[in-house]
Length: 277
Image (cartoon, rainbow, N blue to C red; front, side, top):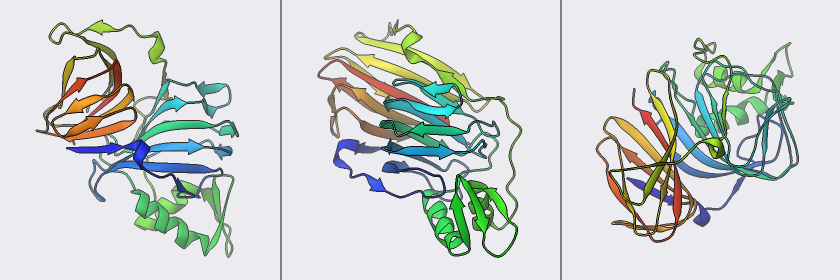
């Protein structure tokens, strides 16, 4: 089990330069390079104008708007509290945030296809190497010495892995935008003081999303066999055998890991459960 308190981490500025905008990150958890289950979980802060072209991923992505709105395409915006699931292979964008402050919990991870996920370190090194040979602008990359104009992420991926990028068939043709506030809470009859809000289960893998609410004194056990479970505390505080948790604490459990959370105040947590490939 791993535990990180986001409030204790500093913002990392200019960590990603392949898209246009002023993003900063708090890196919560990362996986292993080369593992088809590789992933990263970050808090992302946007304090300025941000742009990204119409594009798709060869990995899965989740976004939870902690504060402020996030534009994902013309006429489509995730509002505070909303969640977006961006499946591998599905196009979206262009994005254009006009300098509105926002903080977003972002998870990027190898999708059901098994194609994996390029790590943050690989992305950074690839960006640095390509910057010596060309220019990133408007979410695209152009080489100085030849007629080469590509999506910036595609250019970096192909440089890092030295082969053409491949996209899986899109299981969903568009991102899935979820408004959790419109879902109803259901009492967990097996756990007094616990309510659940299940948002859905996606792909044959599966990926499961939901919220859990705890009344003061209530306890809830995290963990699922054969899966990675990520919990992000959206409000409240409490304890577990390893110490204390509070707002914006992130918890990671793998496979056989189990932990019981006990709330000392009204609390709510986002649960992301990903079956391992």
